[in-house]
Length: 211
Image (cartoon, rainbow, N blue to C red; front, side, top):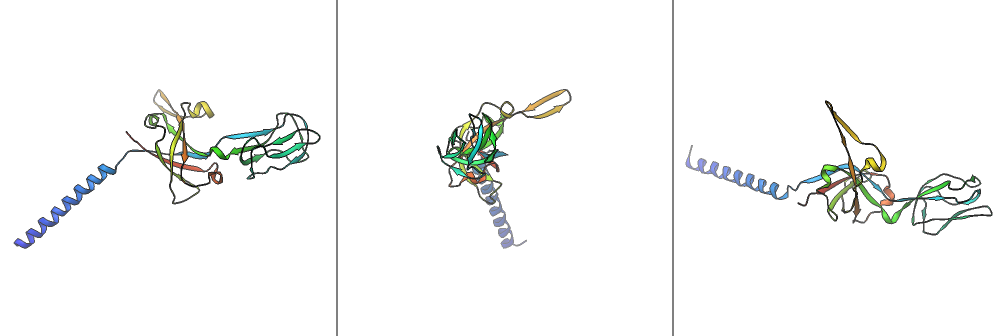
């Protein structure tokens, strides 16, 4: 092997070593641990419009998808009660039609609060210790491909989904039976997006661990 060839090989090997060291340093510096979940969705608070007295529903203007303002008249009972929207929101369901006879406390419609739209991510109990208020979150929506939205943790519930809604993941190994529970974490999106168009849409959330 000639002297020139040997020098060339040494140079190539040196460049390879430098590249490997650089790549390792990059991974170390950028390899922040994250907590990821696909158990998330767009949600908000919901309120029900209900009757307080019986009668024939003479007028009812609500339908699914309609936007309403707080205190807006949305219907009335013949010779009786007038119904108003309790919040600014979007109608997500209706249960009655004009002319129908309704009873006291009967739900007429459900309205989603557009002032409290957020992502609810359900995290395992073992991950909650690494989540803090204000922590940045990257969110993707199943209804929008190829876009990631910025947000932050705005609330951490200490009541598990089992207590809130029932249900749990049960893992049995031999005689040991373990119930895996999740805790709801609220994420506020800071990017400009109308989440009311995606109510109920599944989402994915990635939480960089800060400590």
